Image (cartoon, rainbow, N blue to C red; front, side, top):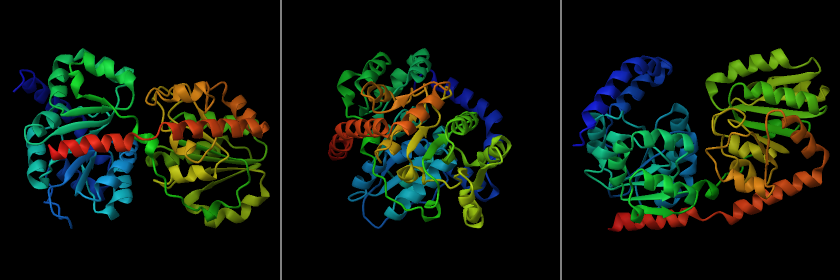
Length: 420
């Protein structure tokens, strides 16, 4: 046992005194008990139609869960799968996207020996595949004693790297427990090497997010909306206010669709819109649209609060311009590929650190990366010059097509791991 583990366990348990109550009670009463049971590893043995031990995959939240889509859809053809996540929205999206495929979805156990061991005893996985950068010490140390553990679609942002490097005496031990680490980009390799991983365990496979598959959906309730339609997806505070003001300044006829990242903010964003919008601009919520749609055609502008989870990636298909949330604040951005997939012109803010490939898209003019002050001008340039908007959309789409292929490279590593 590493010398630092008792210290880590003590600090983890001590900190839980402060965050457990808020985490428990922020959830609705209908899911609290299930959340606590699963976080303690108190799950029932999963029942599968196919024979054989399952593969355990883990993605912390919605982005990671969706990025695993091509891997899950290939592995589920031959293997039983269990998928863990940390957030409520991640679990909801996972169940909606993969439950019908037979994938069993759980909350990740707390990073405690007991919870992890019990989860392992009940689920009996043959391997653990962790998406991106979920380096929980006990999860990796305990699980690797029994089954192989690998990191897929790995990345390490500057902020995460600085934090991990400060405690590299811990993460050196953790990283050595991985059978392999498959990285999105070469730029991450040196960061992982400096934390202590051996070079022969590192593979550059590309980014699974480029291999996304989006099911086409129709939105008949939105067919009457006035164009152009601008969709701002996965927004965080105060981005809604910023984007709303830019829209009202630039667009005299058209629709803005705001899609907040977190559903608990729907009412807050509705209040903001009603406070800021002028009288000549209509407002409605998607869930109430049928009741209100009769009044919308009488307005030249409308603002729609899209209050249904799990549909954003398909919703981008009806847009004329896509604005990526989480990028006008120091959050690191959200995935722009869900809009590029539909060959739409994309605008991001300056903070896209979680998606370093954006720099390459920006260099070839495959998207517009602007400051908050430049946002109104960027919207206007795309609306006034449709040829330019088409050029941005096409260049982004072509570069996305060029960078696909991470799924097969990752699957080859996984097959070798399972057959070894």
